[in-house]
Length: 87
Image 1 (cartoon, rainbow, N blue to C red):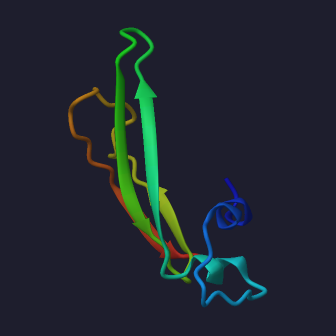
Image 2 (image 1 turned 90 degrees about the vertical axis):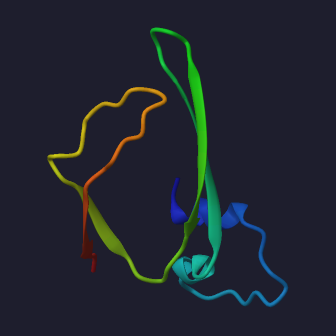
């Protein structure tokens, strides 16, 4: 999903003033991300959601090699990520 598509889905507050940069439209906004994952073999579906805060700054996220490449449904997983300023 592109940023423009995301901005088009969000309701705009009453004090909304359109800027030329769509990233500013997301600044200080919160988005709920929901996912349903179905395991192919068993057909078990797990659901989850989380709230994501938006910022005006861009970052580059890189998953480190020690992040597991697979997970087991129902068990927690830790991801190891490096953040860099993205210009």
